[in-house]
Image (cartoon, rainbow, N blue to C red; front, side):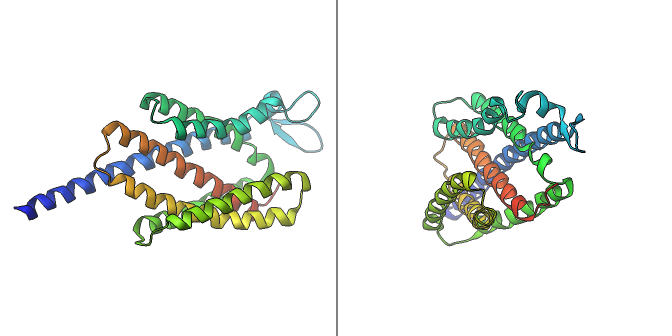
Length: 249
């Protein structure tokens, strides 16, 4: 009798784990679809010839380029707004309703799409598409590794976070130094950091998915948070690989 109840509990646990990860990946893929569609449309539609054989999307000229020819205030708002919105979603999800979290999640994805549209001005389409598929392969491999490994990655994840903070500080410094060598080194480190964090987060999400004490609402919220975290890692890995592999136009 105990064996039967044990099998039923194990079956229930596997079912809620599958449902949790189905929701996680649904949120992640939805965010990628929203961001990708917006980035492609904004970055490639209604190209305007600005001279010297250079073409810029009409949207950029209208909203992201100031009268003086530099980047507009709106461009910087769009660039940094996702950072604040992402932190808000992850830090305040307990006090926010699921409906509001979904609205904020969609807004985050849309803003990221606007921000990512600028890559079409720097890199060729072929470089962007090929790098995306390379990213998908690397991301998928590390996600499977993180889910299946028996090794505790907690200390590994903490170490990667410290490296990530150092990497961000180096990026800020390099904004003023404009060192190609430093950018190259940071990009290489970034590949290891983001792939490693992907494995770490997958292991953390696996633990969350097996927590049978969570309410349905909390489980739904955490699946959205998980989708957001994986989306952020995917995008950062993609941008890092694009800086390494992409051919600039």
